[in-house]
Every structure is written in C-alpha cells, then in structure tokens.
Length: 244
Length: 89
Image (cartoon, rainbow over all chains, first blue to last red; front, side, top):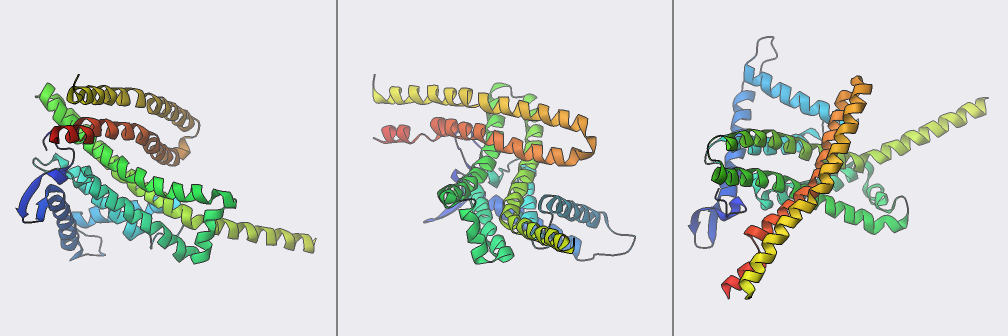
C-alpha cells in the first residue's frame, strides 16, 4: 500500500465500466475462501478417537476457547452466540494476521469493511435481545431507568456502532501507515519490529471486537434474567416469611 | 497568502496538534488503568483471567479516543476535502 492511499478501497485491480474490483473486495474473498477451504478440509474427516489430526486439534482448541470466553462474559448457553461471535473473531483475526504476507493489505484497514462488520453487530444485538426477551421486553430496556433516558440510550446504541467501526479501522490503518512511514525513514530493520507489533495489535483488536460484540449482546439479554432472579429471590423471602 | 498555502499550513499544524493533545488524555488513562489492574492482580492472583479480560476491553475503549484523533489527523493530511476542493478549482 502506498503512503498516499488511506484505504485499500483506492487500490483498483480491475475495472470494467462502472464495475471495479478493488483490493478490499479481492482480499476479503481471499480470506473467506481460505477460512472455508481450511474448515472444509479439516472437518471432512473428523474423528472422535484418541488419535486425531493436528488440524482437528487446532480447530477444537479455537472453538473451545471461543466457547469458554463467551461463557465467561455472558453466563449463558453459548450455542446460539458462537456462530456469530466466533465468525467475527476468526474473520478479523485472519484478516489481520495475513498482513505478514507480502503484497497483502488487510481488508480491515478499509472503513467500508469495518463499517459492515459493525452494522452486523448493530443488527445482531436487537435480534438476540428480541429472541431472548420478546419484542416489548427488548424495547422496554430503552426507557430504563426513566423515560428521559430514551434519547441517550438510542444515541449510545449508534455511537458505539460507530466506535466499533472506527476503532478497528484506525488501528489497522495506523499499522499500515506507520510501517510505510518508517520504511521511508529507517528502511532496514525497524519496520520489521513494528510489523511484528502490528501482528499482536491485530490479534488483540480481533479479540476486542468479538468481546465487545458479545458484551453488547449480553447486555441486551442479561437484564431480563437478573430481574427474574430478583423476583425469584423476593418470592423465596416471602415464602420464608409466611412460613416463619 | 493565497488559499492553497493557508489551507496546507492550517491542516498540517492542526494534524500535529490533534495527535499531540489527543494522545495525552488516553495515555494517562491507560497508564492508570494498567497500574490499577496490576495491583489488583498482585492482590488476587486467582482472578487474573477476569481482570485481564476486563482490562483489555477497557483499554480498547480508552484507546479509541486516541484513535479518533489519529483518524482525524490522517484525514487532514491525506484526504483533506478542502485541499481537494482548492486543488480542483
């Protein structure tokens, strides 16, 4: 990526009339194809035996790790959250980690990709909320604790989506930019160190994106359960009192 | 002074100021939160996992303000709409 181009959207590979294929689209498809191909190859011959391939071991570690993280955050059944949050994590992590390959620009360094991912979260939060507590139950959380908090709750919903998108975009774009700037100043050794640091940042950003998505989903679904638990407690206390 | 050099000067100076001032607050905040997390881990090593996860999420939240400043600075330097407007004229 050149130093002048802010996002890989501006790097056009192929143009035919109004249709153009830029670096973001190409590398997004490369990452998607890679993920699908590897998962398909590995899950083709799964074994529940003691002997299994190292690739199956890798996938099991990944899935189980994601399951544990989701369980820690949401204290709920992980089964319905794992496909969404796990996909977000895997996609962003692979996007960022492949940046060590020469000639590759991470699609997450483009605002359009990160905005699309953030919009996915923006849509998924109400979906999971409604699935968990019903339509009215979900809407009711906007007017909690009082009616006056309604505009602030809506604003918070929008601004955190924006924050998700800009955070990922800024981090990945800054990694590429700092690499390019250092390449112009100290060309030999120092950019490599920054690149290695960029790998760490990329993985942490993928983790943070997935964790934040899970936290938002959990906050849309959890309040319900807490209230139920409180009511149960109250009823138990009442029961004890009446018994006493 | 014509408008091209005026806009160029204003964008460069503002970009530098944006990053310089905008990174003060987040760095102070991140330092404080890391120090607090370390002392909590020292007090309760059993809760290391929870503390670390919350720390990372919190750091990302704090850091995003600095990232906003960085993005604004990048826009001012590389994708400045006023500069493009003046150049196109």
